[in-house]
Image (cartoon, rainbow, N blue to C red):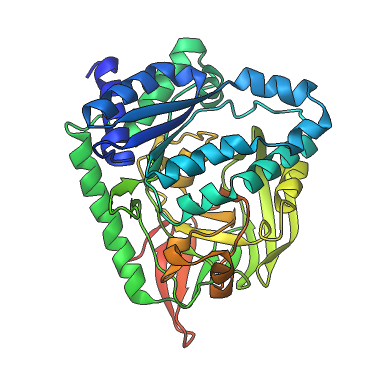
Length: 409
């Protein structure tokens, strides 16, 4: 296939499988400006599939950087509520939401971490209602990626400009199965495979998971009513969608106060335009009590101090070491890809649909159920080819889930 055909197939996949747009539905796209050619292709595919409106919210990395460099301090605690309200209004009218990733991993390198933390907290607070829509599957939503020049050159440091962008496009196409003769059918088969693991784990009803590797020794209890989910989801309107493209994970919620031990990251975390590398977190009764990082330690501290729930684990995700993304032997410096090459956890809020009846619970009920709530949700990678995971039953007996980074059943 030539590039134009692959790009068209990628847009079609985002529309038909990612958000699964329905007749007369609105598609709301949030995107950086460099992705404009892809956004136009998505809009065409969406209208052809029956969308009534395609609305686009643009962002520009250079303007973002200028603000962090020159704006007054008070600008970062003042998030425009009207911008958050637009998302809520669209969600209440059953819009589908497509986010396009692809930022420069080093965009805010050297920026005062306090500014980044303040801006992230203000955004999280303003968007709390919309985040609940997303985390309880009230709407269909998806995230895909489009290379920027700076991102591509970070992933392929031996290449420049268009050469780097081309290489990153090819890596994205491979990770999202665009090279398949029929990508949509290939994705349906892939989701069915993930569902098999999801069903098996739900049948096990594990009390806890025990992670061990050369550096990690961590035990995570699971809520009694936990539910494992896979790459596919279903909105309140009954529409199937895929939130992350690519996705290789099966995931559930942690018991907020049931995490103990130490976990060490295995890939860099790009948080708000700053990289955090080679970091470790030590938990006691669900909270981080000690941490360190080779790079970005101050940014990590600001993340952990975001709110009451930002020091606790929300999401627990299992990903085999051998996956289409991991097999590229690339570090993408982008969580959408790197989390699907590795077992990972998320600091912050859990997904409501990961416990029985969670989709209909309010925030107070979700806390009562034992899962974590926060204005943030940040995935970090901690899996490796050496990682073993045991499922622990209520009676204390153990059963292997992963051995040497791969499924044991």
